[in-house]
Amino acid sequence: MQIKFAIRALSAAAVLLLILSACDRATPTVDPLVFTQTAAARATSDAESLAVRLTAGAKLNQQATATEIPTVTPTRTASPVPTLTPTIFLSPTPTATPLPSPTVTDTPSPWSCVLVEQSPRDGSTVKINTDVNVRWTIKNVGPATWDAKYVDLLQVGGDKIAEESRLDLPKTVKPGEQVEVKVVLQFEDRTGLYRTDWALTVQDTAITFCPLFVDLWLSN
Image 1 (cartoon, helix red, strand yellow):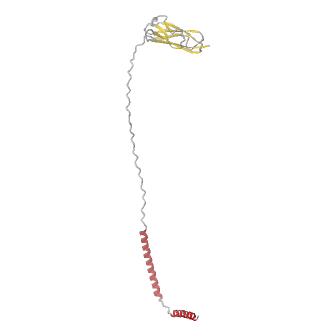
Image 2: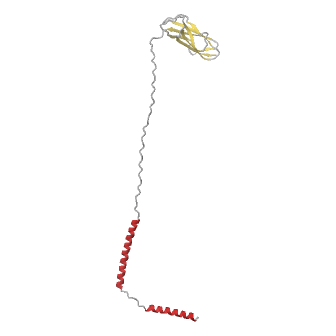
């Protein structure tokens, strides 16, 4: 215990001596003018140093800043559309073979007639179950004579209702003369329109001329 107390006492004495020694040191005297000049010089030096640093920093920033390369958008040039010229393939036009021109003959047929009178007239009405005598008066207007031995009245079409389909001419007819030819028609019980077609024909030849016909209505 005595040793600890002695150590503590020595420590306290040492601290006290240090305090007294610090108080005895003389405070240095500083000339105000020198201090002011020194402070101004330091301020100027600091300002110059700051300017140098700012200038250097600016240069560094300029160097560090990448030069901007303007982006150039390429202009798209439209490719010209090729003009297509259509190729037309022409098929050869067939040449029509001309038909032979018919030979025109101005010579009139020697077998000609005109109708002068007819009874009954076309469109007349007749009763069923009756016989009807149809008469045509015709005139020879051609240069040929109608010989009764060779010229006949022939049915060439229509309803088959005549008693006879071929009849002789009642007489020979010279040019300019007239003749009456007749047929007998026998009607059945079917009502409606009937028609028969006739013509003069030259026997043993293909000559047929002077067409005649009659159409009649059959009613109850």
